Image (cartoon, rainbow, N blue to C red; front, side):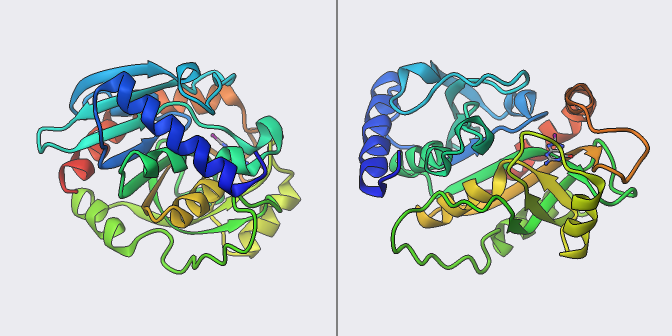
Length: 268
Ligand code: 8IG
């Protein structure tokens, strides 16, 4: 994927196959599940259909433990059709930022107007530690890449919708906000890199959401970004970041983030 027209054609084709396999012609809200969030969507509503990512054009099965590889269609008690994207493509998998945008473009082609991007991330603030859900207020893209190709001069002001952040705070007034810095990964950062990100104003450190949010804005979607802090970033505590810690934080925060997600979606 390097060509935008081709990427958009592939997304349209994927949306047609998705509609065919799920029987749901249009979706309203897309939800991208990041590390630690896999179980958080289980009680969002009634599952209408679940499709293996490999059946949908442009998707491949994810290789990272804790990252699902299905697309499911759920209908909420308020009648919203939610497309749950368990399959996400990380930049570190192939250094192909256009491919990172594919699930997002498919969601837009499937009719979604809103995308909720979730992730597991590191925190630079010791007082906002593992298990804390945090609203993303803005991002710094440190990947050196973009999911967009060509003269797409997309405005990223208010990328993380002020309106949707207010909705999330109605659900949980105690939610902190933070600026998310995306590093290219897959290696975690050095302590010096974390000091740099902190100096730049970031407090959430990850490998996924900035590129997805850019793709979402380009596709005309309204974005809500929700991080789950799963570890303190490198050098912030004595412990080194580890993927086991990430999975454990997800399990422990499960009930809280399930409730939060359900409540937010109920207000959309
Ligand atoms: I979960 O500490 C998770 N993802 N870059 N740094 C980066 N990505 C992460 C981290 C982290 N924790």
